[in-house]
Image (cartoon, rainbow over all chains, first blue to last red; front, side):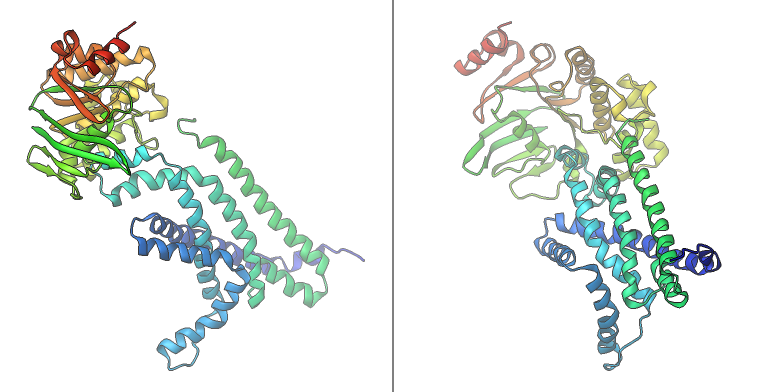
Length: 228
Length: 242
């Protein structure tokens, strides 16, 4: 068998567009996931039992289902669900990209929620008491005092989860989306260059994840309070 | 100024406060002392609602605190508190620690809040450390920032919950000096402390607690020279032995 890496150069633009979509999914998943996940974490820690029970149920449900199933369900069932709600039962096309963004936000939020919750739990109860004693409202206390500390306490874990999310984006191949792996697969099948394509893609995933894990390491050293 | 009447509190079957009664006049400095586990910290935390009460009532100025009162914004504004473990906000600079409640709770403009913070930090001798973060300061300096943070809301009453217990011995005095000057300026203060020198020299009165009860209330001089109750005598004998 001959490995011909020049085959990669000619399709580089297509692979790059795939990589771009992979990065877009990651960015949307991280941003939406952390925002929604933080709200879920606050809800789960809330003294309001109903809110807390809902958040707990959502988180446990999402964490018990494989991502690949969630992608399938959202892709195949949501058009029917929307159609049933607004369009007299005819399914409404949602589009692969939108499906994927929504899925990653909804799914990753459950994981980010648990990480952020751990961040809140790692803050001493004295900090909560100090907020109360100063008369800060619950909203102000969370936004200005507690949330910044919670995120800082778990930043390395948040980044680690983000690396996992980046790798998980490859699962969108199940609905034939053209992310990095999807693009490579399509080329590989067209040109019969399986080895070259999967080797290239593997190296790209590795480089991104390795760089990110080095960033985590560096951050851990920097994050101690008062470290310079 | 403050009146605590018939206050009781239990954790499950364990009663931490038993029918506590006390009055604190405006400008008065009261020290609460007693063996550990006697309910001192719990009592002082009921005064600003950090600990709820099961029975009785507490009046702070015009504010009436009773069991199941939950809206305490007005109370928190008029009562400042200093904690044993400082509880400064570690992600904020010294200056921001002292301005945050001013801008968020009192809605003071940022410039006004910062001017106030600078003045207070100068008063506790920390002008040189305004831009630093809490972790870069010594324990004594952190506790002085915490005092400035509480004073920034112009409280009518200051509560000190063992403010020097977490400090290295050489830093105790810098904090006690700030508290003493505050007392001299007429601040109404309730202090839980083991610093008997401070109690004797600065406090107007001493509340002695044991087993959740206020066993004895006396002028500071009288309490140290001629305690009335056997429990207070035994306590003083134990802590003043050396």
